[in-house]
Image (cartoon, rainbow, N blue to C red; front, side, top):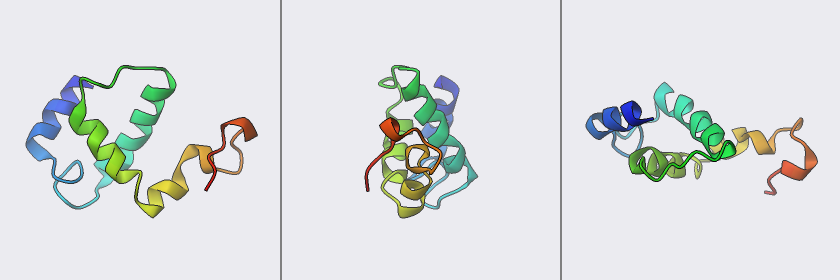
Length: 80
């Protein structure tokens, strides 16, 4: 994750590559999701986590969240 954080120091705006959502954002969100799932300490990566927080507030990212999918185990499902 260090290499990604370093790259984001140069390219990030509101999102990974400036202020428009790009494929980089679509790739970042699941990587952070899985890092959290496996209890990776993300505190050394403030740019990545800030971008992920902003993205997860957008309707499309909320709807696509793995824990909102129909095949998600009931005990892991997010409400609303």
